[in-house]
Image (cartoon, rainbow, N blue to C red; front, side, top):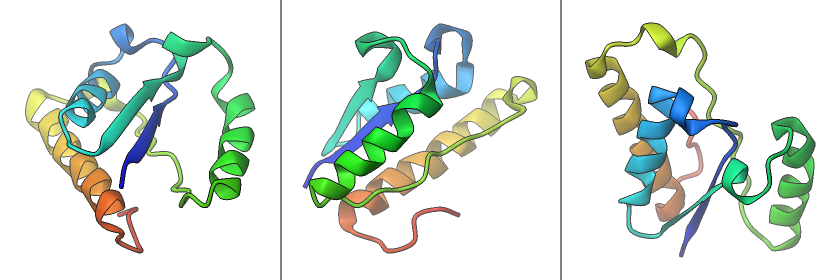
Amino acid sequence: MTTALIVGHPDLTASRLSAALTEAARHIPGVAVRVLSELAPTDDDAIRAPLKATAHRLGMRWQPPVVDHGVRGLDQSDVDAVTRRFADILTGAREGEKELVR
């Protein structure tokens, strides 16, 4: 089974955490990463509803977005901890865990 990860950050070069999470996800077997800003720049909220509907129609399990605010003050050990938690979420999604949001 493949887990589709859709990254909605508008500019990964401006986000240490989102960039780290995206890079970590690219190294997890069975995770297909798509960055919306690389495909078609748009408003994240405008695309969420059609993505959710498409996932439902295809029989995929929808998981709510992972959103972290106030991350500019995080030091590298905090970024590493969030990255590990995120990898656990993706691994759980691939393995079929029922509750992925902690």
